Image (cartoon, rainbow, N blue to C red; front, side):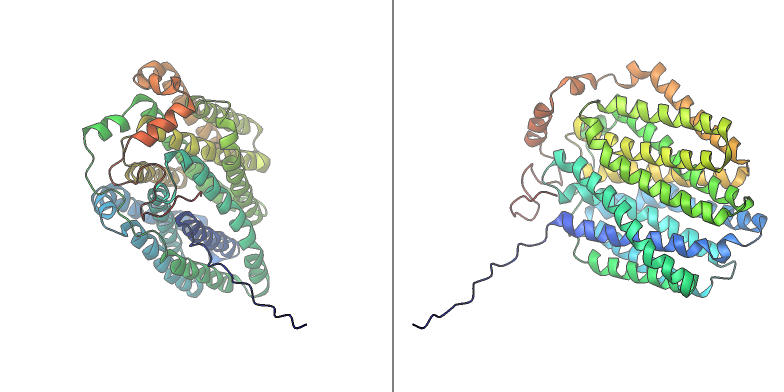
Length: 436
């Protein structure tokens, strides 16, 4: 008997979801960042005279404020309304960073390395703003935003940890120039991946009175203040330690350890935030984040030393990740009528400006290590006191939102259509909803 075995028909693969496309691009961008940091660890960046380095950093940080202070408020709204605007920005950032890394490989032993490095850091912050605007258009509804951002945070930490392995091997065998080229290749791959990002209008219309009022609610503004301070603490800590370690024995090694600790702490914060949110409401998560920063900052100023620096770096990155997801939850809760893509881009621009200003202060002050730790603690403590003293006034009008159950919030999100965004459960392209 002849048995004919027919080949099985392979069903067509499902189209890649919008979130998956963004996640792949994000992974490649973060991997490129991690590789660049490894390349800098053994470069001219950490061997040049300290005073000359500070001058170069201060000059470029001052120049880098211009896009945040002037360009972003004017260009940002226009980009939001152009189909593919944020996608175009991400593609541009990936392209320019590829070129910058190639140039950095050529100028690895020159003062020209400094403006190239900080141009790359400014572009990194520009990408984060654009990514934040795109996330709401890649999920089914606003209730999925926390999970989506948590996943992106975890992806950032994991891909960064993986990317540093070949970067370290290249650094040890071929030197920093080869590691820069490796980083450039990762950004080139991110550029190709970014061509598949959603081609959508983030905000088709200008903000109306309802959106403006919701985005100025007490709890939301308190959350924005907390995030601004915490993001500033992250920027200040990074640059304070970068220059303080230069005067310490094995400073380059300890800076590399600090970067690893900060990345792992941020990844852990992204993992823990959804769990913490099940037990604490958003306002308490923000208050707790400031308390931890204040206690650790003051405590490590007393304790001092490299161990104190590592603890502080890990703590501020951990609580900043938790606070970010808490803040995004408040935006979902208290501004259901707002365009979340535009809202997150606006707030993220403010947070990145705080990061840049704090970095400028850290470089300009030239403080000893423990004194810098104390500043972080005192700033967090002062913000905490301000929020606690004026908490009733700041959250006035938002209490009704806190009293609702999570199912009520989901129903509200599903019944309130946002201009420029798809209805809950429906994708912009009309396809069936897919989870992030």
